Image (cartoon, rainbow, N blue to C red):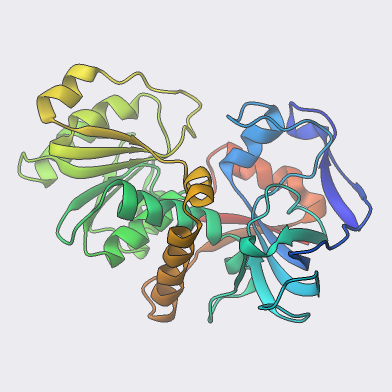
Length: 324
């Protein structure tokens, strides 16, 4: 089978497309013929050796994909060859075939194609867990989403809106803000031209926002923290800017605010039943037309460098997917 292999930690240039042995399907596993795989910012960090979990090279990266079941191992009762599924392997998704434990397999929600399903689990799973379990948002809350046009940010806009929140989308240019509006954002802030904190205060009549969803980090984090309302919740999703912020503890004290780290993958491992319930909720929202996964860029496996560059340079709107 053809696969994208990381030969050495570091630059994306260390990746190569080459023939690899097809994985065998073991007990409790499902072998899937991959049609599309989603790219996420943590994939870049893993390849560079900068992620919080280190992976030794050589390895096949990729943690979400969609395709058709090719074979099932012993003790697998709920899937059969030919089923359309999306998977959440711990690596090895950027390949033509992937063997994955059955608990990391889900049917593709009705209405999604392979490309949409390939980029569904991590971004939507992260945002729903962050807003539901971590922030406990309620209808009527005001949610500020930073990096609102990115792969994970746009899902936060959609989900927060579906949960009855008022959504303020923040991004660096009008094209990205228009994209966020198309996903349901009520208000927008161009933080390249406006003060994020001042605009949040103006849009909330001085109260501040109830929740900040931050996959960006960097200098915007300080402004966003100060834009929180009393008892606000700041969700630390990631650091796409490359800079990890240092939060002033006195601001959290004065607002009785909470700064909450969100690591969906580890939470899902510790809470598999709750994670599956979340996925069922998300599938229902798709069926009801409340969520529409936005895949804006697809690249063949051989064009992986362009795909990673679009994500790393923060040019992409919505989800970037490899077709395999």
